Image (cartoon, rainbow, N blue to C red; front, side):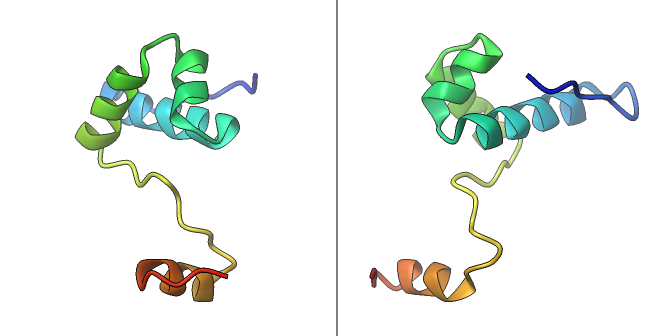
Length: 74
């Protein structure tokens, strides 16, 4: 697992960063929760509380994000 260095002693920012990093590494809520040592329900509550965008929108494929929101898939 990668080492995360915090810029300041802000617990909410640290929690948000840890959750986002775990989600990014695991690719799903169940795996991220396992990395963090919490239940998937606890992680879902944190995603809502900390306003973490999940699932993340692909940055390099804006046309697919638009099609997905319109209900169109390839």
